[in-house]
Image (cartoon, rainbow over all chains, first blue to last red; front, side, top):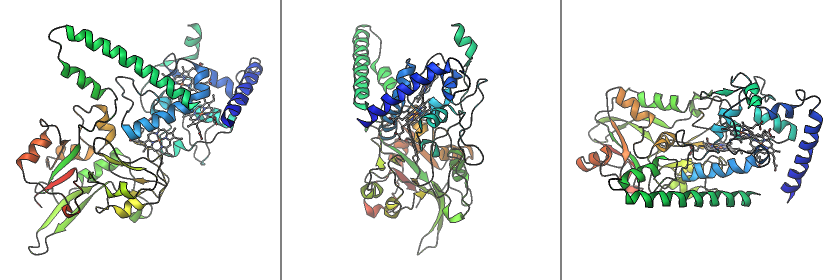
Length: 151
Length: 255
């Protein structure tokens, strides 16, 4: 229940933020999030709002399936798509497709990292990246911001 | 919220299942399409591990050279394991052990790692269910549940597990690991899950082969066609500490 309220508050916040950000889109961290430099045309679920609200449920579901049952993300068949490795591969990149590091030298977390930027804003702390790699390893084709807009 | 998601998940699963069923039914009508191809696809496409398989190893200690650490080095590279500041706390998935016969004083060198028991003591003692055995016999740690109590390390007769004392950086994307939990050999489960029909060898086995020693054979014990199954039938092999009745997946020759 408290989760629902949180989500509701969060989405109203987002709505507010986005209405504000039309004037100064680049300044707010959410302005950046709206156009992440990512591989592919769409997220694992073709619904940005759904991902925004429920990504944690999808990945925690996937984590039990993979660790306990062995249903692992297969790079060829693209099943078990909610692998954290896969999220990172698409999302932890800058506009030019270069990997964005999560941990800065001083032990601080990088607010430019896709996951961290929004978690900063929403005051969420996750421990996943103390074990999971937060830098992409695979090669990707980058759909640049301008290309995406023209579509 | 999560309930909703799980429902969505099951409906899509059912739908794809039904679709697959239709496809199979229609394929049955076409002569010459063999069903083996289909079942292979099911194993390699990221489905759950199955208890029809059991992964294991046969290690020939006569071929294992004392002083050679190729398997250990390969393992450390695969999981990016670095030496700890305190040497005694360095994480070890696999290590070289020398055993000496009490009477004859014959010395044998062998690699020792998690033996992937059928009845693993580490799983019995775990208070959170983190120490687990997968359907296909791989014994590993579910780090999401591990609280770092180290009971499993006490229970293991092979000293096969290590506690991660220091913060880990630059983990491999395929092998997450971090401070505060127990970790051990998982037979390179990330390699196995790529293709369970014809899996890549674990890193240690690959290294031993490329050194030319070929002391380790990896495979599915239950698969009559696998090299491992054939070798186990042909040669006498032993479990370490067989008196414990753990029925290990890793077996040894020449000791």
